[in-house]
Structures are given as C-alpha cells and as structure tokens.
Length: 261
Image 1: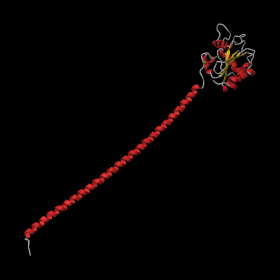
Image 2: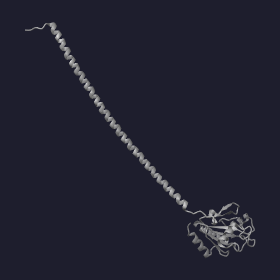
Image 3: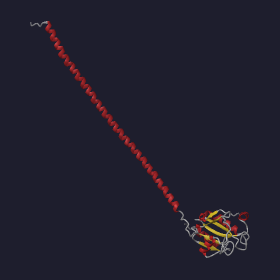
Image 4: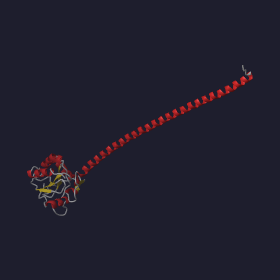
C-alpha cells in the first residue's frame, strides 16, 4: 500500500481547502452580486412605476386644468349676462327720442316760486298749457283742470299753468298770493309757472311767442288752452270757453295719450 507522508498530506489538504474555499467564496460573491443586481432591477421597475404614476398624476392635473377651462366657460356665460345688460341699456336709450330745437320741450322758463323750470321735464308727456287768473269769471275752471290732472297724470298727462294779468287785470296778486289762492280754493297740485305776458308786443313771453308761431293763435282771454303732444311738435289750440270736460278736448287728449314717441 502506497503511503503518503503526513507532512505532504497536510500540505495537499491545505491546497485543496484553499482552492475549494476560494471557488465557494467566489460563487457566493457572484450570487450576492446577482442578488444585488436583481434588487437594482426591481428598484428600477419600481422607479418606472413611480414615474408612470407621476405621469398619471400629471394627466389628472391636466384634467383639473380642464375643469378650470370650464370655469372660464362659466365666465363666458357671465359675459352673456353683460350682453344682456347692454341690450337693456340700449332699450333704455331708444325708449324716448330727445326734444328737437323747435320743440316746446326745448324751452325753459321759471316756476311760480322763481326756480328754473326746464320744459324738457315734460318731454314724453301730453301737456295742456293754460293761461290762468284768480279773479276771472272762468276761474272755476281750476276745479276741472285739477280733476283732469289727477285722472290722467298716471297715463303721462300734465296741466301746466301760466298766470297772466293781461285780461281785465284779473291776476294782480304776487306769486305767494296766487299759490295760496289756488291751493286753498281748488287744491291745485299741477305745475305753475311765473306770471307772464301772453299778448304780442314788448315783454311777450318767449313761451307764448313760440305757441303763436306753431298755431297762429294767442289767447283771447284767460284760460286759453294749448294741447301739446309727447314730443312737443304738435300743438292744438282751444279757446277759453272750452271747459276741461269738453268732449272735443277730452277726445284730443286721449288721442295724444294713445301715441308713443
């Protein structure tokens, strides 16, 4: 039997241990490396999934922006409301044509109290202009004029009185006296202008000069009447004896009230 010396056997065993130990350690190292590489791949996959999730979030965010766009559409709807408001304004602007230069309503005068009285305030109304007096046999017409004013004012009608002392000196009072007389005796609430001269000549009121030019008529006595259309261009004259309840006068007033500008 072949015997290997003990010293040689020990050296051979050491070599074998070293050889197999290194391979085993190297294999373990490769396995660890592969494991670490696998972890890295898994991590990459996870990161990729994370990126995809982030992309999805971004798409959701875009969807949120689309909702903001819907809000802008809502703003557009508000814009439609503004157009509607603009349409209402347009209707307001065209509802009434302005008074022309030759219109009765383009003139100005003074009220009985001395304040400015702009006749454009009557534009759009049917107006009955009357020269009045406190001591005339026709003075009771105040009652019918006040009743007519109350009855028809809601339809766009107004009486406008101009006191005058032209005929028989029958309006001698001061503005305060005239106002007190009319209020105490007839409850007058319609507008009253300052005292004027209706007759031709120096001192004639521009109001009555205009009325004569338009109709060819001036009052022959107290309580002459001019019926003026809503735009101030059409004027009809009625003599002093025409009472406020006269059928022809009432028909003419109703006809004018039925017209629009």
